[in-house]
Image (cartoon, rainbow, N blue to C red; front, side, top):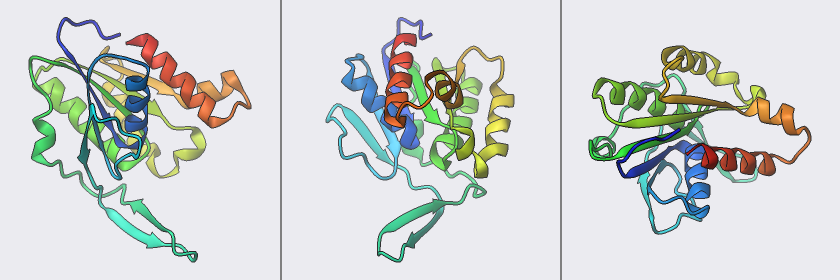
Length: 186
């Protein structure tokens, strides 16, 4: 999938993208790595650069006192300037994001468009969430699929096909299979 003589820079947008690049780095894939997410993953290797990106939304507290965050999927994206500096003409960027949450969905759409406009070298892997997870983001996911459909730089991985293929496997095992398949593609 990634055919280039340029150094590879793998950038994970959001939770799913960050989780996948952590797995790829552990599998030994040689590349420069960057996670753009909030919060920072506890198991982030020192070779992986972390950029804090807090989507718009609100924090809530459960009755038990545990804090959680609800992103505002309708809020406009505001991209910090330091993220643009990641994309260099001398590198091939592999963007990885789960489409469903705010960070992965909006940053993938934004930078997919921006990189095409600036004719930079990149490939994008968009992981479509399970159908039951898509409630608040169906419209955005469809827009992104339509926008990039047919563009060979974009690969869409549908988690529902993994659930159909592997049945009742635990989710962790399904995600490990997705990571192995992405590693094989690269």
